[in-house]
Image 1 (cartoon, one colour):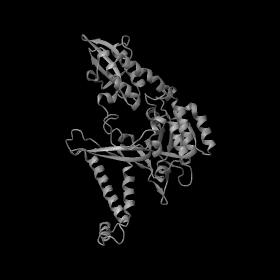
Image 2 (spheres, helix red, strand yellow):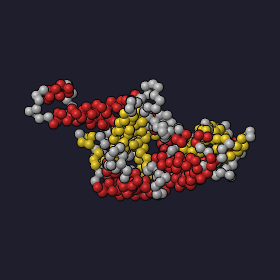
Image 3 (cartoon, helix red, strand yellow):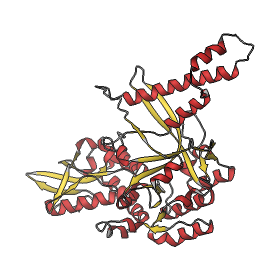
Image 4 (cartoon, helix red, strand yellow):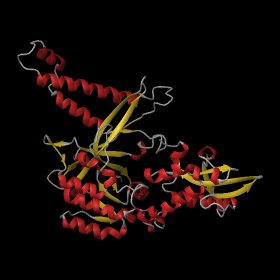
Length: 429
């Protein structure tokens, strides 16, 4: 059986002050319980393969959920946070939720019709602009004006009785579910599609009334206190409105707090009592479950290390690689900001202090004890562990001379192996 999970909080960026991620998760849960579900704004940009290229930016205000089997949650938490809300699909549908509409955007070296997705987004934006003009003409033209104009607008409308403004709203609501099929930087081809994302947006209505409403000043300040670097940033090109000021909130669905409809609230095991206390204070009766309850038997030994502990362990490992391989400093520093996949790479005869990304080759997979291990890891910690295991068992390699880089000799050559963010090799956007 599958459910929809909203995981939080995302991991802190490398350039932010370190803080306890689980504690921040509890602050977010407290805010949800006190006020409701926040729909965070974001700008999605689509570039059409024209001369010159045409760019369309879509404003979306949404809360994102992922369709997962319970056994998949722990791996998902490595990227998206150790706290989560768990919902039945029907509950989200009743609140206006829908699956994301995935659209490919591949406008580099176009050889076929692969830019159709960006073209569709572009045409919808133009239709919206035409409807905006018609809406303005219909509502701002005085009855005493040119007698041919209003009949002409009625002729344009034909049998459609819906107001032009409502047609515009429908297009904006549709576009709020658009999402890229993948990312050249962050995912494999069609990588986002396999995340099976659902969205709860600010366009849903019940009985003709929008569920979402604007935040008040106190709620805006509370968002900034939870994550000031994230919520203080603007989200649309050429617009200074911050994420905090642009956010909207769903306070109730069907007369109840939206958390009351959740099947469960999930938090790291050590914080179950804290989460229960938060929900009890706000009279929300929902089970609270420890994260490792969702682990498979193979995952349970590693689950002893909390997500916060993994993050704290990762930072010195990244700094160690920067010291050893200074010529890829920029890519390694950026790795904490983008929550990337990590991969194992190999090269020959270039000492680590001189190596560049052009020298490195991706190791397709490793095979230990007859078992093939794919070269894709959710953290530098997991990637380094597998790199160490394969290098020591298969090649007798050591990292004595260059911490974080394993070296061995083979057929007169020096071979080196380490880990880097996948995007650095052009495996993501």
